[in-house]
Length: 169
Image (cartoon, rainbow, N blue to C red; front, top):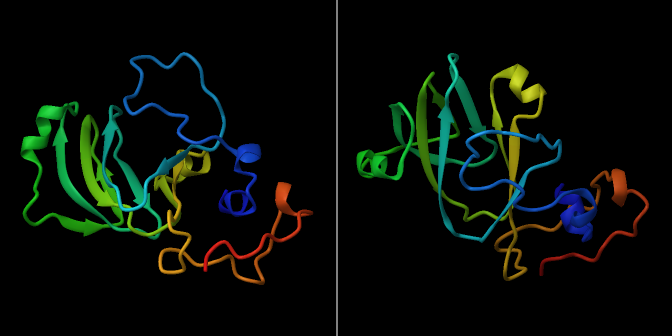
């Protein structure tokens, strides 16, 4: 996915922001496609993981840390924010969501790149329960993101394309 962004052909591989902020009451159609959220560099974000099932769920943010601010039973609602631990929340990479419960995490995407949030339950991970977060540098600066390394292997739609010039200076 990051290669498609780097080569400027992301629109041939995926679409940004294809899922709503709030889950639908009933799922009537399932589309198999990469889910990529397009986020603004250094924006603050709240993510709620809700588990309506009877088995524990575990989610991992690959290469990034977040603050686990709440884990409670029941269904999440905006009023639950008053229970968040904003004083000494723990920095983590993985969070567990217990059956019939929810968990809230807070983070700021201050590192540019493509980040993966995925289920750590192996069968769900295998079936693709994951999404990606794309954070593009607004300044095109090496301070925020490195260029693609020279020896990077390419595949898919970019395999036969000429290598683009370095994106960041």
